[in-house]
Length: 121
Image (cartoon, rainbow, N blue to C red):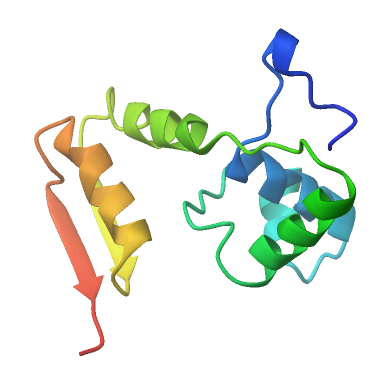
């Protein structure tokens, strides 16, 4: 992915692009990420750099500086995904950043018609 990055040509990876590449590389039919990648289903993960993947990126960039992730690309994509839909619903498991992105995207269309949110208190 680093070799394909070209800032001058606007080729910078978003979290969803990285997840798709990982799904294709996994090549395991037991993986949800694999099937999403094979069927061009976008998986958004606004906190991709949290946890182990963030640690891997840190270590990789220590040895190979310059690998960038475009954090705004997926925000743009998810916000635009609700623009032309006649109805919208959300099923949200847990709170935090993913919930914020889903609900914020729906604000651009005056909210969702329905939502189910499971929060653990």
